[in-house]
Length: 236
Length: 236
DNA sequence: GCGAACATACCAACTGGTCGGTATATTCGG
DNA sequence: CCGAATATACCGACCAGTTGGTATGTTCGC
View 1 (tube, each protein chain N blue to C red):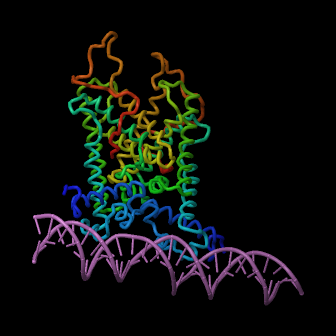
View 2: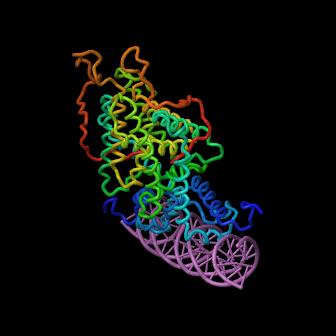
View 3: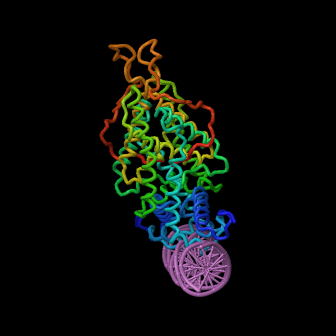
């Protein structure tokens, strides 16, 4: 038999539980999600649940960690060697696409969902969320810093601060868009942010008739257009 | 006896319940907040609770509505006749102050808290949150539009879209700041937003030696400095 | 004294979590 | 290679505590 078809398949069961928890908690949040509900959605009994996770919170921790792990790497930044500004643009385009075309997904970030509920609790779950937010911010901050080194800036800015601003804007956009039932709000916000970042670097070459200086690193840099590009990462 | 000292005081009891719900839900969110907990915090029995509110959700609806009502008007915009740009600046300064100096308040917006949890539910509570978010956005949008009419703009923008962006940024900032346990993140974000809005209008008067054109409407326009200003509204 | 404003006792449904048990893999002596 | 021994994966009934909500008082102001 194949490995995936085994009757007893520990890794698959664990994964099913985490997947179910991801979906349910993204919809309803941590508190409103029931252990029984997760079990049903995962097609697993309670016995199995507590065989793998010591508590509901443990499962949530594992779920958030998995979300961050997959999410950060899933973020579609294009090829690693590309110009950081291009990669940033890829990030924006990916986020916009994921918001406008959520498929059957709940249009919410697990991280933001759980963080909102547990932000004032001293528990482990809050820490994991905090780390997750920092991870995304660090990624963006690195790109911004790299872009600063690769391009002349038109207006000085602090990469770290801007990265946090973008993170907050992303989380808030999801919250508002979800509540209003209008993904376009989030898309608009992201477009504004995208334009803002672009504007920080010099789009108009310094002198007239100076189309000479271009993106520093060469290679196949396909700057994505405004139109949607396939599924981008929906992180954090 | 005084009106406030009566043993049975319907309006006061209702208020106590709403106050308790506001505080508790801002800390823990809607789902994690218990009816019993609210009753204890309000110093009231369950009987009284259900005398005034048909259900937990009813109480939440009333609480969110009260939050919006008081919040929108509490937002410290300075005097009504002032220049819209000054009033916008007052708004930013007030928000920054409320974030940096939360006192004993939970550093969270009731609206965002509840909205995050119920964004995917079709219930009445979600609608109230949606309306609340729109109310704040409309307020800011009006100010931006008025500012556009009163001042030359250096860069074209859509007041409505920008207002939604600011709303999302505010909500997201609270979420991130709370989760990271660092109000300065939110304060920084707000400062960036404040600078961004300021930059949209011409800080450099058009021609050299043109210190003539000033804020349009006269009056006592005290542009608040960067330093903190007393409690601002922490809305939405 | 009468209705509104509260208090108390209580309930059915559900919560996260436990526990004894069973079925399947894995190991290992012979 | 085999079959017993043991470890792992999983099941589902069950539990004590909590939940939102109710039914039935009691008390107070007019």
